[in-house]
Length: 286
Image (cartoon, rainbow, N blue to C red; front, side, top):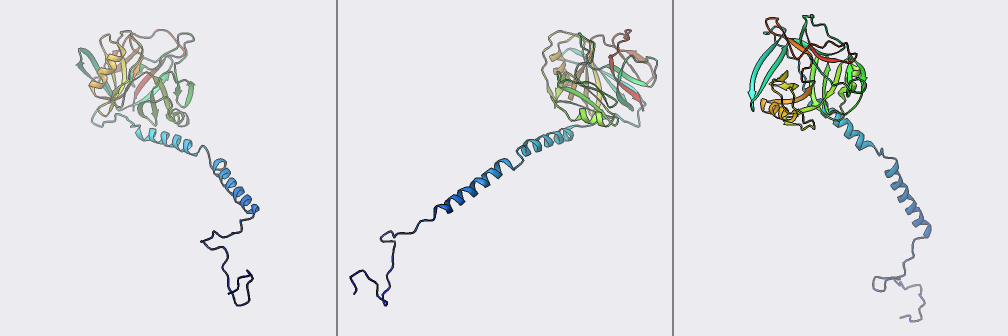
């Protein structure tokens, strides 16, 4: 056996076995540099070239779609009924409530003084509040596709598009833009009921109250004939069975309805001032 450390032509020697750990030749430094550079490029691409707002944008789109899906539209059409307002009285928690349901009448908003002799009007009631400082409309308001005011001071809303109406509660709603684009109507007021639950509000004064409600599959105006706190009135609407409801101008606010005998009954007191921004929710004969 050769012990000099030289390898003759008939001998095979294994160098760097597992038993001695070997002397593996390391990768050249430039290979490691290339690998690190590739990793950095991949990380940079994932971080900055993916649409960073893709998830929020998708979420926003989903939220708007879900809002439209949740919106249930009403028109109170019934071929067996005349174009008129049906009146029903009830008592809840000692509060006397009058439920006014307009049939076969198209909802719309009106700004300015109303003609009380217009027999096509089945139901009219003041809608959005007016500011005390300048008399302009409080909150977002769209009249036949034209925005007249903006603002989110009140979360309740009413939207009317293509002759159908829906009510809801949201800080932002795509229905404002839809009403603008499609010649519809939109306004905001205090929310009273959202999804069958009472919505609390701050005002603590007692007054006669009015609310536009989605009730028993119909749009109805509910009037409290007693002076009541706003939150107590909202609670009574929940017990009445309202799914959604927004408050309207109450107290002695102007308005009237026409019953099945075509008899007109005044709500509150007649508005005699020619105010530029006074506005009404109106149901007009189809």
